[in-house]
Structure formats: structure tokens, C-alpha cells
Image (tube, rainbow, N blue to C red; front, side, top):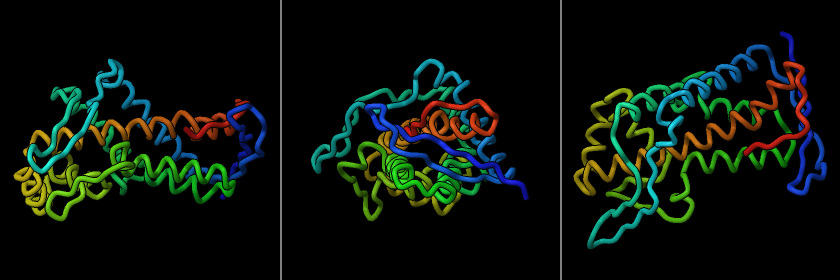
Length: 222
């Protein structure tokens, strides 16, 4: 099986060269990266992203007295459903070119410690979002800002309508209200797509340009 070697210069914020990150990818692995890039391009062509209307919460507060209080733009529209549909091959871990699989592939192929730390940072941001970096809201036994809860919501309400997961979701909705649950999950969705796009336009873009013979001058993971 043929492989394609890639060497990417790593630069510090001041422009100084930190070294090179080297990796070799099979033709099949490059096809996965291309599929990932194509899926992101298709998602970016949807109205929600083109018009910069991704659902986002400006603030999230929680108290025993008032429950979850949110401020931001969480507007339901056909554009939200279209974006969720286009994001499916990027968000579902069992999809060959999902974010999780692509990030895992890159982590296995590159040994450069600086780049691997950057990939771990991307994974952390993808899994818990901004709010999850600072605090956690637990409903019953379910922490809200986790990848498992986001997947629960996708499989219960958006993609699969799994009856068992739907029952768990109903218990969470009963505690803080369906609108609050959906607002939190759509905010996580927007933050995940931000990270997906950073990976696509950073490291994946640089790799594919190198393979295609169009050499970048430097590298940024995101």
C-alpha cells in the first residue's frame, strides 16, 4: 500500500521555527481526510453558517431557585435542521470521516509533541465546549456539558430517536424544561462545529495542500 509523506513546519506566535511535524498517510487515509474536508465544505455552504446565525448562548447561569437561565440566540428554523443534517457525518463517531475519527488518525500519524498537544486541546474544546471548561450542571445523575450527553441528545431527539435514550432525555427535560435542554445542546452543537472548522482549515488543509504539491509556509492547528 502506497504512502504519502508530509512534513509541516511548526511556527511559534512570533514566527520563529519550532521544528517540523512529520507523518505518512496511506491513500485510504487521505481519502478520509478529503471526505472530512468535503463534509465541512458542504456544511459551510448552508444558510445558518453563511449568514452567521449559528445558535449561541451569551450567558448560562444556574441556581436552585431559578434553575437554568440562558441568554443568547437559539432560534428554531429550517436552517437549524439543515445544519444538523449536514453535520451528521462529522458528529457521529461511527462515521468514517467524523471529527473524532479524523482527530484520532492525526494523533496516531504525527509524533511531534507540540502538534499532539494542540490536537488534545482541540479534543477538549470539542468535548466540553467553553462552559464545560469552567463549570458543570448535573441534572439527576446526568452532567450536561459532556460528549455523552450531547450524543444522548443527538440519538434521542435528532438522528435516531432511540426510545431508551428518549426516556432519559425526557427526565432531563422534566427537570429544566425542553427549551433549556435544546438551548444547551444547540449551543454545544455550535461550539463543536467551530472546532471542526478549525481542524479542517488548519491541519487538514495543510496536509492536503502538501500532498497536492501546493506548499504552505507554516502550520496552525487552530
